[in-house]
Length: 406
Image (tube, rainbow, N blue to C red; front, top):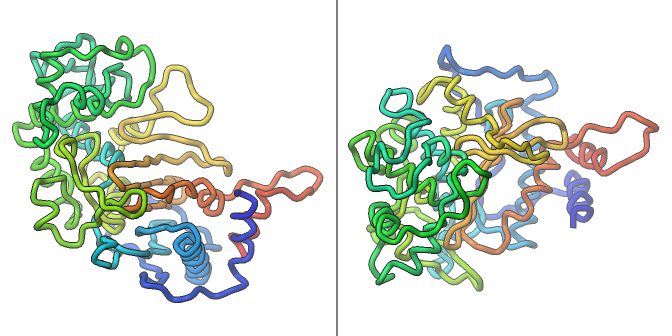
């Protein structure tokens, strides 16, 4: 699979792309007005408008190939040195009605929502309304599990059972939406058994981020959705970003519908009303605004953000770590990126940021057909491994590097 993909990349410059219903490759300069607190990046002389346009054309060929041969249906935006070098939309928001996607179509972000929940906690921490080492009981007094802190929730070290599993067993009527408060009530009454004692080890936890959203409400005094809108989305002018609401399917325009096997619609169910671990809807263009804001202090100080991007595992894993709502991974080229993927009810999402060159890879899809399986190969293309300086033998890293620079 990887060899075929690399061979495809090498041949990109040998043909021109067919036009499809998508945005053309384009180069967009970052706004001239910059904050004094903005993290700057040195742009090398080799990164010119010509090379950026060439890379955008290659990416257009890649996603055209994914669309025609692999069934990719979604939107994409790629940046480098704070500039958009490519954005495109492929396929339909709703296959039944043949509504064409565009780069302002909103998708359910699934677990990519977690980084926004973590940001809400960081904002409240800077406002002095909570501390990372506070216990859950300081905000939810009848919470039945002892020894769990906000930090443990942020870093997936709570040991709590997955609410999506125990709610299936304990919620009496799945035709009735369940809220964060309802899940907390189930935990207080039934005390689902923990997976392990808190702070014993890492275990990815949707329950933890559901709890964080509830803590945001208690600490701020406003609903979680209101806090997100007023404190994050509106300040960043993320005008097409919102949290799940009951009227989503009937009133919201330009929203992609999730599709599962056979391109069947996957309608929301009773779990969609739980927020924090999922539930944010956004577009690739709004996520670019989010990415750029994280190089500033529009929301929180850079020193606060640094902790979010710092690994938390006591036993360091050679391949991956976790901060506050972000996975942390080294690439083959030596760079360290922060990223997150998400899956929920026919949606897949992927957001990767490389602080070294201020690049980002943002992909949103609404068809569960393995569209994100190709992210690793795409990363190899965007961030090729450095050539081995030995006897000059050829390797796949050099092939990928050649493909990038043809």
